[in-house]
Image (cartoon, rainbow, N blue to C red; front, side):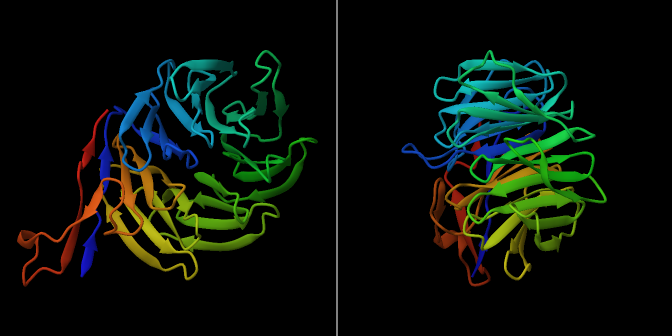
Amino acid sequence: MAMRQTPLTCSGHTRPVVDLAFSGITPYGYFLISACKDGKPMLRQGDTGDWIGTFLGHKGAVWGATLNNEATKAATAAADFTAKVWDAVTGDEVLTLAHKHIVKSVNFTQDSSCLLTGGNDKIIRIYDLNKPEAEPQEITGHTSAIKKALWCKNDTQILSAADDKTVRLWDRNSTEVVKQLSFDMSVSSMEYIPDGEVLVITYGKTIAFYNALSLDMIKTVDAPASIHSASLHPDKEFFVAGGDDFKLYKFDYGTKEELESYKGHFGPVHCVRFSPDGELYASGSEDGTLRLWQTAVGKTYGLWKCVLPEELVSENSDTIYCTPAAPEIKA
């Protein structure tokens, strides 16, 4: 019997959702933060999509958002020329870090002591959150706006992607470029997987996988549409991607075969990420919603319950409906 994917829809945002991130698994479950052009990043329970709170304080579109592993701190990057650090438990603003242009990317070190930022002024900055009054360490070299900057190799190196069509690997201490990748077009997204040191890069219709330490290519996969974001499953069995055609694609990582595609959004998909336990993936779209999708369709997990009601099963039916208990989660 075929299984029908039924995503959970998380509404509440009023503009396109452009970035999202999960925390690690905590004693209270795991959490999801979303960045939106409405300037109001939201925190949700990761496995259900239930709204927890909204971080209020930015005066422009929020382009990037992240949580630390413990989900005690959040950071956001915005068009008001600031990055902000928040207490993710109380929702209080802890710190505002002024920049000279739009900020696009924020990323905590593993111990949450430093914050990495990047944006339209082409400069990577490292802020010591224990010394907020100190000037940040600055790393220059990109010739266009930085889209993403991520810690890697136990926070000793930095990966950055920019509109200058390059991805660069930097040494944190020397601030020198260790390796560089050049592309024919701007990179649309970048994901770093510490377990196995895998770097996932999307550009055009291509999803590319690299060794994050050497920047040697592992493989590339071409998708049916222009892709804005991709995410590799924690077990590296498969990966998902979304882009211009409103669909979510799931591929086998080993064979590169397209396994499934789902349409649920009513606009281009801007961001997609697997949950830390790999049981679901979240997508954010131009349509202003987040959607949560089951990795294994039909499994009872979170708000999904696999049922075989008699009225849904007939002699002509070969579909099992795995229905969410609450299909729309509102803020």
